[in-house]
Image (cartoon, rainbow, N blue to C red; front, side, top):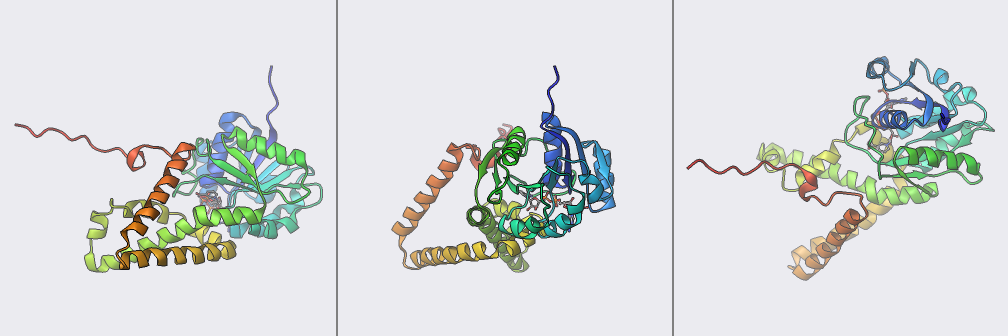
Length: 313
Ligand code: NAP
C-alpha cells in the first residue's frame, strides 16, 4: 500500500547549504512527490543537475513555483522581498510559501505584502547550519534534533501551519512557533551577537598578525580556532542578518558592552571572586546545552586527537 507524500511538489528557490540540505532530507524521507529547484546562477544550476538530488532544475523562479504546493525561499534575507514579488503571479492557490531566513521581522515586512490571497505565508527558520555554503555543502542530516522556528502572521490558516510543521518534523527538526519580533530578539543573543564577536576577534587578531606574524595561526588552538570557524560564515548571509535585525542586535550589543565593562573592571581591580563567580555561571550554561542534546559532551567539540605513541627505546 503506497501512502501519498506530504506535498505533491516542493519548489526550492536557491540551492546552497540550506536548500541543498532540505532537498536531500526531503528526498530521503519521501516528503515530496517531486522536488524542483531554481538558482540564480547557471553555475549553481549546472552543479545541482550533476548532483542529482532533485527531480528537475529550472531556469527561472517563475517556472519553479508553477504547480508547487510548497515553495521555500532558500536565499539571503535581503533577496527574499524582490523574489517574493517576482514569483507572486505564478503561485498556485492554496500553496504554502515559506523561507529559511535567519531574521523574521524583515521577512514578514518584505515578503508578506507580495503573497496573494489564497496562498498561505508561513515563514520559517531552521536553527541549524555550518560555516560552509554552496550546492555541495548540504547534507540530509543537518536538521536532525535541531529547532525550526515558524513565525506565521496572525490569522494564518492553521492547517497550513500544521502541514509545514509536519514537513520540518519529517526532516528531523523540533518545531516551535513564535512571533517574528520574539524570534529576532532570541536569535540576536544566541546567534547574531556571537557571530559579530567572532568576526570582531578574528579581525583584531588579523591586525595583530601584522606584528606577531604566524603566532596567531600557530597557537590558534587556545580558543581562537573556535572563533575562526564562526567567522568563516558566508559574508552575504551575515551582512543581511545584521542589517535586517539591526534593532535587536544593537540592543543586545548594549547589554554585552555593559557586561564586558564589568569583567574589565574585575580584572583591573584584581577581583578574582567576581571573575570566578561569572565563569562558574557560564560553565553551567554550557552544561545545560549539553544536557538538552544541543551539543556533544565530548571534550574539544569531539575533535579527534592523535594517539601518543611510545618513543622507541
Ligand atoms: P548559500 O549556501 O550561500 O546559498 C544561497 C543561495 O541563494 C544560492 O543558491 C545563491 O545562488 C542564492 N542567492 C544568493 N543571492 C541571491 C539573490 N540576490 N537572489 C536570488 N538568489 C540568491 O546560503 P545558505 O547558507 O543556504 O543560506 C540561505 C538562507 O538560509 C539565508 O537566508 C540564511 O539566513 C538562512 N540560514 C542559513 C544558515 C546557515 O548556517 N548557513 C542557517 C539557518 C538559516 P547562486 O548559488 O546562484 O549564487
